[in-house]
Amino acid sequence: MTAAGVLLRAKPAGVTSHDVVAEVRRSLPPGTKVGHAGTLDPFATGLLLVLVGPATRAQRFLMALPKTYRAVARLGWTSDTGDRDGELDHTGRIPERLEIPVGEQLQRPPAYSAVRVGGERAYALARRGEEVETQPRPVTVHRVELLWHEGERAAFEIECSAGTYVRTLVTELGDAYCDELERTAIGAFKLEDAGPERLVPLGEALSFLPARPLSAPEAADVRHGRRVPRADAAAGHLRLMAGDTLIAIGEARAEELQPLVVFEPA
Image 1 (cartoon, rainbow, N blue to C red):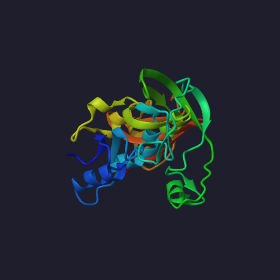
Image 2 (image 1 turned 45 degrees about the vertical axis):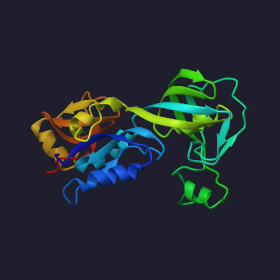
Image 3 (image 1 turned 180 degrees about the vertical axis):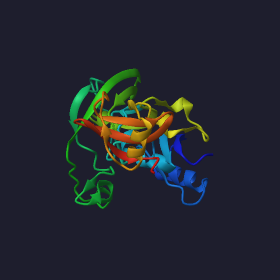
């Protein structure tokens, strides 16, 4: 496998995202950089984007893509972690309305999460029995569909912004926790396209960003990290291309394009 691009992997339950990254790293030449674009909890399954080689430098752009999940809620139960791996308590109180709010909202990350509180991971504090207070942050739930409801179980399809905790959306139904969670899509990447050798070239993986063609002199400037004229380029982040070759990711600033990440240096 060529050591550059975005690898689409289907993570099974019971392993961490770090485990998947470590497995890929062992299969590549020593020293190859490997990362991922969005953690899945150990109990969760589904699509994980593993970044190989120069793709690790585009992590923040890929992590910002919206995510789609299928979640199965167990109703009439609570869990201190919000999922099936926590301490479960049967209450028998089935939520009257199985509605997850759509739109922009403030969400408080769960105590058992990887966010940092006072310089330490929240889950580490929670496991020691310490009180954890995470800070609310803005998230967006783009779409929710109730797929089915049978007794104390209900399934939802949820499309949401990066950084959204789906198990929190489930627990906010009332007495409920997330019993199953599968990530089915990240942006245009689909779970059904995942496979051990499914490596997407970086230029293709970033095709959700508008492209700005570069002339030969401009490409030389960008390779040195120098700004080039914005011309009619769209606002925001762009792929700076020399023909079919991705040179850099740039950002439109006033009348110029500033290279942020250069993949083809001089």
